[in-house]
Length: 149
Image 1 (cartoon, rainbow, N blue to C red):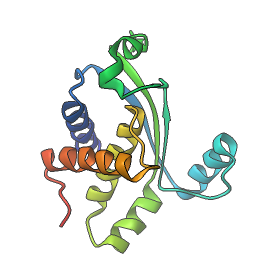
Image 2: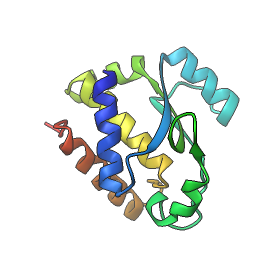
Image 3: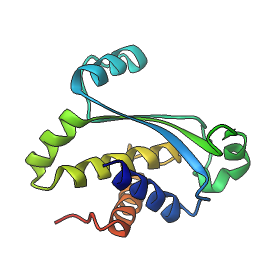
Image 4: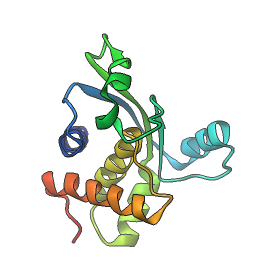
């Protein structure tokens, strides 16, 4: 799973046109812990599938459009520009994979891509933004052969 998620993250960086020396913290957990994080960090009293906490607020555009801001996030210990934190509930991901009829690897890979694109400044609150974000996610998933069935 770790190797797959590294490939997914590398594919996202490639799709976005970012250097491969970007990094993010990824925590795989369960519904109880993600519920706790949701409540303490967002005031949301329930479990969700994925959370993302960007290290940079891109006022305009995405990480690719704001490389000077991103370069300020260089972490010498990691040897890369820190994009932020991702938390995924494996429990929720497995349930969603069954619900959607695809593999847990595909679901966990998709949630990783989804969260990483959030860290790079994408959102899906408006239909036009959602279409752009989904296209990026699906392009990354295709690069690692995790396309929708």
